[in-house]
Length: 116
Length: 114
Image (cartoon, rainbow over all chains, first blue to last red; front, side, top):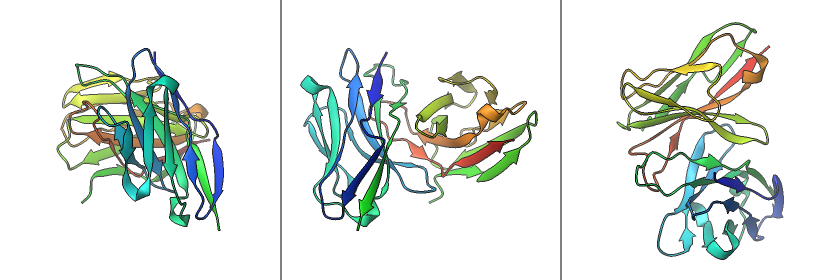
C-alpha cells in the first residue's frame, strides 16, 4: 500500500522568501506524483505533476518540484513567495498501473501563510 | 466554463435526516469522484465512478450511496446522517482516470450534522 507524508501542517514564510513544502511517499515502486493547491473556499487545482521523464517539474504560478527517487521525495518550491500564494497545498500519489483506474492518495495538507 | 458544479454549498442536517449532494460536470468526463475533507486529514475517497452505470467504493464508503445514471451527474446520498459525517465534500472528475490524469474539482459542500 502506498502512502504520502507531508511534513509540517503549517508553514509561514515572509513575502519574497523561498517556499519549501515537503512531501515524501512510501511505495515499493515510484508512483506518479502530484501537487494540488486549494485557495480559501475553493476546490483543489492541479499545480504540477510528475509521471515520467525530467525529474524537475515546473508548474503554474512559478512553483516547481523535484522527484528524488533515492529520497522518496517530491518537495515543492518557489524562489520568491507572493501574498497570493497563501493557500493549502496537498501532495498526492497514484500507483503506476496498466489499468488506468488507480486512485489518488492525498497527504494531509500544508497550510502556507505569507507574512507581509 | 462551468466545469464541476456542486450544490448546495452549505447545509445543516439533524441526526437521522437524509439528503443528496448534487454534482454535475459539463466536460464529458468518464471518471467522477466524491471526497470528504476533514481538518488535518487530507482528502478521503468515498465513492467513484468510471462511467454511467458503474460505481465503486473508495476508502470511506460507509453511510453513503451513489448512483451514476448519466455521464454528467454523480449525486451522493447520505442516509441517516450522523455527526461523524460533518465534513466538507468535494466532487471531482477526470477524462480518463489514467496516467497522470488531472482531476477537476468542484467548490465543495460544507455539511454539518447536529
